[in-house]
Image (cartoon, rainbow, N blue to C red; front, side, top):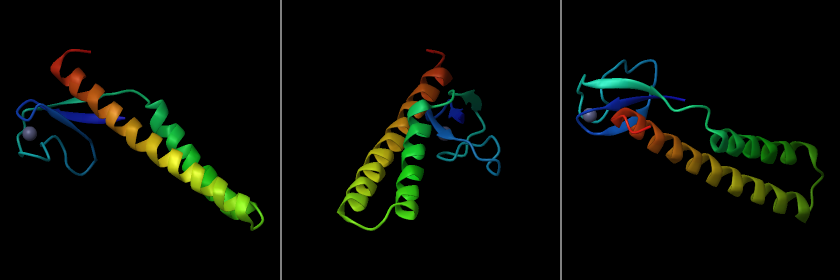
Length: 99
Ligand SMILES: [Zn+2]
């Protein structure tokens, strides 16, 4: 995951191709690129979300299907959100030169 770290805001945000090197918060160009690694939790979360979708497609209707779907979706969602915030914290640390 690639992030842009803004020296003025002391914050990092996920980089998109369109925004270039400007800070999305304050518009400063006093930014640097950091790469926060793969993000295991993030991808694991997305894997579970996909698994939840697969359950809907491949399982026969019944209470178990919906219970499993709900669990996969909930856990997948939590993991992907937490994974994302972990990555962002890491990106901020790297931007500050602490990691
Ligand atoms: Zn900024």
